[in-house]
Amino acid sequence: MRHLAHGIDRFQREIFPDRAGLFARLATSHRPGTLFIGCSDARVVPELITQTEPGELFVVRTAGNLVPAYAPGDDDGVAAGIEYAVAVLGVRDIVVCGHSACGAMTALAEGHDLSGAPAVARWLRYADASRARAAAAEAGGDVDVLVRENVSAQLANLATHPSVARALAQGSVRLHGWVFDIRTGTVADVADVADVADGPAPALAA
Ligand SMILES: [Zn+2]
Picture 1 (cartoon, helix red, strand yellow):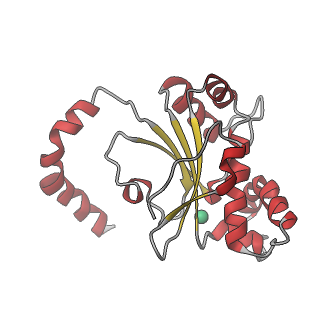
Picture 2 (spheres, protein in one colour):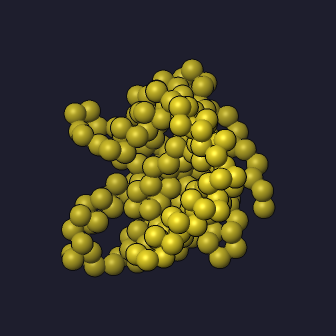
C-alpha cells in the first residue's frame, strides 16, 4: 500500500496544482461525452490509452468487459451505470473495449476449470453468445477471435437496454467496438460493429 500513499502525496504536490482549474470546473459539472465499458484488467487503463482528461470518460469496468443484456426486475449495477450515463448524463458515444490476453476470454477459449471460482463461472455465462459466435466462425479455441466476437456480442447486449435503444433510435448515441493490444499499444476497431451501431465506426489511429 505504501506506493499508493506515495502516489497520492505526489498527485497532491506535483500534479493537482497544474490541474486546479480543471478540477474546480469539475467540482460542479459532470458532463462526460463517452461511456467507456472495459475489462477490469489492470493493464487496460481507459484514460491512458485514449489520453483523456478527468471528466471526459464515464467508465464501467467488468471482468471480460461483459454487459449483461437488459433483464427487467434484476438489480444490476452495470445496467444502472449504463442508464445513468445515457439517460441522465447524455453521453454521445459508447465504447465497448476488449483486449489481448484477456483472462476471462482465455479461460473460456481454453476451457479452464473454474470450479474454485463459482462467481466468476456464473458471470462468464454472459459470454455464452460470444462463444457461440466464435464457434460459428470455427475458432472456438482462439482467444483473439473470442475477444473480438465478445466485443460484438456485448454491443448487441448493450442495445437491449431501453436507454440505449431509445438513444440509438433518436440517433443521439453511437456504439463503438474496440480491441486494445497490450503488447503494441494499438487499438483496433471491431469490424462488424456497424451491424449494431447506427452508422460507420470511426477510424482509429494505427
Ligand atoms: Zn480482460
